[in-house]
Image 1 (cartoon, rainbow, N blue to C red):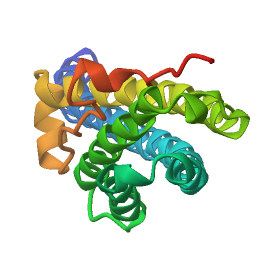
Image 2: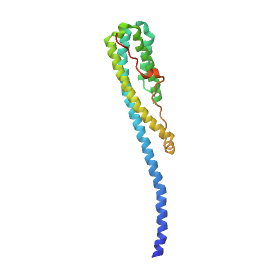
Image 3: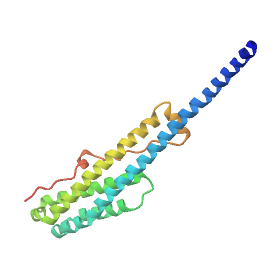
Length: 197
């Protein structure tokens, strides 16, 4: 009887060890994969938040253009640049990189349009223009908050894609680094403020 237990014990130990060698890595891979999948969904969700704020900004632009056009007819080039950039930004994009690129162009042209007000004191004092500028400023602030949320999720995803050993699991299952939603220059990081009369 004692010899039978002695023969069974090594077999059981080997079996338990073999199961542990298979199960522990499998569980770890599943946990890492699920972490990547959750992050991918969070990034998609946070980018959709950016889309909402971009739409809000896009909706304000036509009224802003009409107001500036009424006072600054000689600034046709800047006005057309905003209209063209808005059209491009509102078009469907193949990737986040395309969206980011077109929004950067729109941001630059919009900043130039708002800066035009400095040349036109009557435009600078127009209540409708000031209200549109305030709404645009609020939209830009909300966009900045959405961008920060998106970028924090992207940073986490990119760290997992670059860190060992999670990068191995990410590579096997096709998880890749995601582009940050960044502005080209520090001047673009804030909406130009037009002071009152």
